[in-house]
Amino acid sequence: MGSRGNTCDMQGYHQEAQSARRMSPRGELHTGVQQFMTGVYAWMAIGLGVTAAVVYGLSFSLNTVLLIATTPLRWVFLIGVLGMAWFLPSKIETMDRPVAGGLFLVFSAMMGAWISPIAFIYNITSIGAALGGTVGIFGVMAVLGFTTKKDLSGMGQFMIMAITGAVIGSIINMIFLQSSMMGFIIAAVVAVTSAGLTAYYNQALKQMYMMHGAGGNLAINGALALYVNFINLFLSLLRLFGSSRD
Image (cartoon, rainbow, N blue to C red; front, side, top):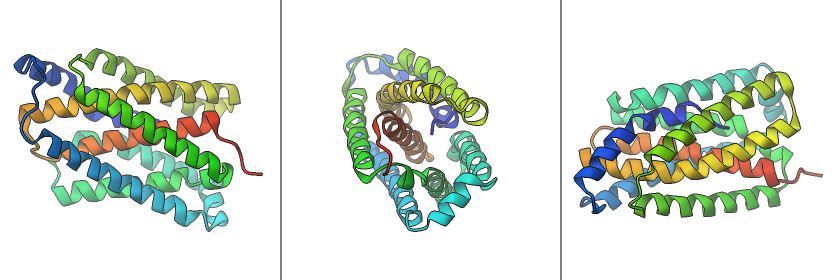
């Protein structure tokens, strides 16, 4: 699911990223930037692992998934996921590292519970294909964002506005319209913007590290943004190309 909050942590980065680019016009990497990005992706991988474990565990309990998906409990998880996605980016930098990491894992588990119905809606082939496509697109765009010398901040801000609109549209469609066509259009928008934001976030994180180092919880905050972007892309591809279970 798209999240307004997953962009909050990066919205303030583009100006500093532009300043960093002026300071390093040739795009020379600060010593240690690759190690820093490895740490970001390690946190992201842990979050995705927690989400996958929750989805897998709940796949053995249809009753539990139905409880989450068809009762008022779904609003608890939706509000919880959106609330944490909004809250964490702006607060995580000032938290103690264990608290920040713990909340990121709680968020990942809640996301797993929220998306767990996919295990009963789509067949395993579709889920695997969507996951493979997500990894491929995400990987290509991540490398592009990390290596390009072109400033992506303008594109990033446009993508942030687009995905924010898509999230709002998705919620309206889910509650009021329940239109399949609208759902497919939103999924396409989210897929495209998620691909673009993957490149933008990687460049922004690299530039932030070059300016300030890995102080605070920048790695966790970056992992949070990339994690939600990965989930957005995966769910969008699954919605666009997935086949339902027989």
